[in-house]
Length: 295
Ligand code: A3P
Image (cartoon, rainbow, N blue to C red):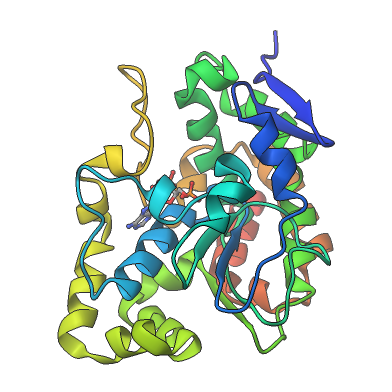
């Protein structure tokens, strides 16, 4: 019988059990201010990676210490609540998984968007959902079980495509910087330079300095972030994958059946065809197409 992760409905969104409901409610009323750097992503698209990069760029390339937590240094608005974010030092570095809204988008704040191809995102989200057993009660769920809720947009923070399309609407604004997980994977140093040019100030100087930049790229590498994982999340039960799990492009190849791949490809082309984000995924889309056609 198909299994389903457990969720609670909050403000119209399915959310994991135990998610701080009151904090989430305050997030919907939060208005960023001048100087803020808002990192907006759909879950499992490289958020923690970019949180660490933003921290490194604002701290002269020093990594998040082993006894500190990213959740307090670059807090998740919906989890920590608007009152926690209000008291952060300037520039406030803020993570959100909410879709864009008139309140959340302020032309005086700056926005960093990270997109990831939906195939790898779904795989990563599956392992995340299995691993946090106390939140989703889905330890025995299969990838197919998870894909059914992912495709229906009934996972935490809602539908992948609705989220991505909402932020793509503002992608050309001067205060918005877009990148993809795949670009970061291909050339992290180049992405740090681009981000530095966008952010300017201390972060811009850090990215422009070759020695600091080297520290940033090294501390943000998969190998380095796979160490001391208590910095990123609570521990998972024995036998579950780590939070910083595999860190590759193309893990979809080890998970999808052909019909499931065909269905997600059709939706991807329908929702994202003609948008610039799909250009970054040319090669992936071609590989997916070939996998769909192979006997
Ligand atoms: P995988 O599960 O595919 O390995 P988020 O932070 O949005 O939840 O995203 C988590 C994904 O980013 C996981 O993907 C995780 O392994 C990957 N990730 C985190 N840090 C990374 C790094 N330094 N390099 C590459 N991938 C990283």
